[in-house]
Image (cartoon, rainbow, N blue to C red):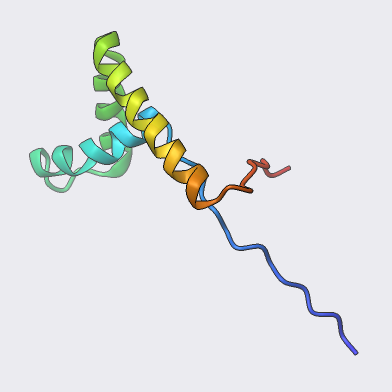
Length: 84
């Protein structure tokens, strides 16, 4: 008899403030620069992020905290375990 192993379902990490900012701005940059590649989009968004005021960054941090709370409700037993 063979032992069946079950893989744990993949649970994504909750997004941080920059990831949320990037997800929001990615389509906007793509509309402004049709045909641009992802590395260029990332560079543009990173430059914008660096130039944000602390107040604007705090707003994205608040959104990330809300996302983290929703994530905790959806997966209460989740614990981040980085790959080795």
